[in-house]
Image (cartoon, rainbow, N blue to C red; front, side, top):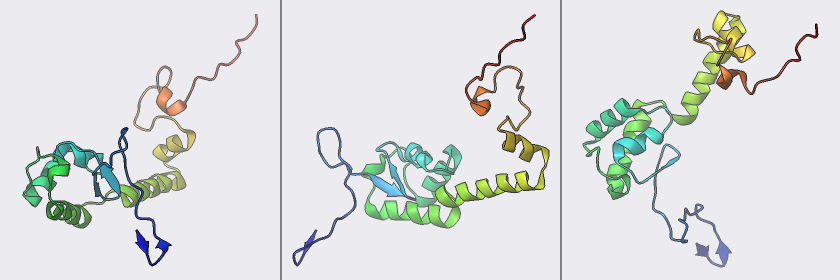
Length: 144
């Protein structure tokens, strides 16, 4: 946008492989893909299948309608419902992090497991648990 000789950048524009501008719905700071509304809403951290269906029914929107086919008014209604009724994205992530930090501060068993980077919910660690423990660190065996 150019105003009286000054260049004012708008938002960065999403383009596909051919350079065409992609129209994407942006809700709760997330660019939603052009899929069915019930699927696209699950791309927002904190909204699962059940919540997405509830949001669609509250908004009076067909859950199978593509997200880009919704009017701006319908998208605004979705934004308003999510903003008012659900804790999502940044605020939810920070709350989860605070809860984990509180567990570590009080020194409970779950907090100790978080601190050591081991599975928290009772899984075995002799084998498996590689997701939490990270890549295998080989220890040299004893010589006889």
